[in-house]
Length: 147
Image (cartoon, rainbow, N blue to C red; front, side):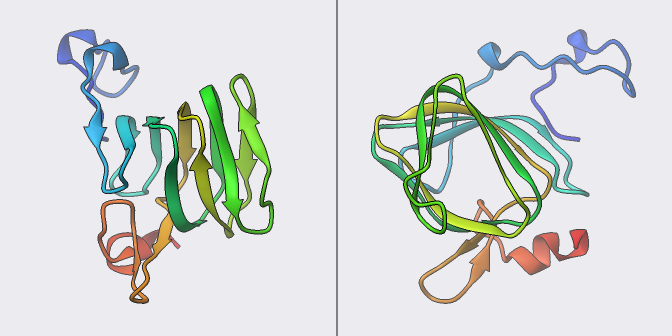
């Protein structure tokens, strides 16, 4: 499993793994205004936990949560800009989770910092009809095995 886990902080290779986000750099994503620190990523199953930071006005385009997605808002807010739950807003100190198959456009009007947990990477729907993951890779090729 991937994460910025300093070797000196591990108690055992197959047991507990201490991750120190304060020692990690923010990584740009392909979405303007969105940066991430990946705390846990299992390339085989797609399980991922990440701190995500959004500049004010950042929009995450049309995407589907393939399995349950969990979000705890640490700062700012995360708003459903489009979709069945349009207008629902999770604010600092609140937790929101989405059922498998839920689809929406997310927005951080004032910016935000969230802890996000994904069982499988999201599907993003491109204007040209492609379905990709957050890195821009073809979703079926990269994650189809997780179905």
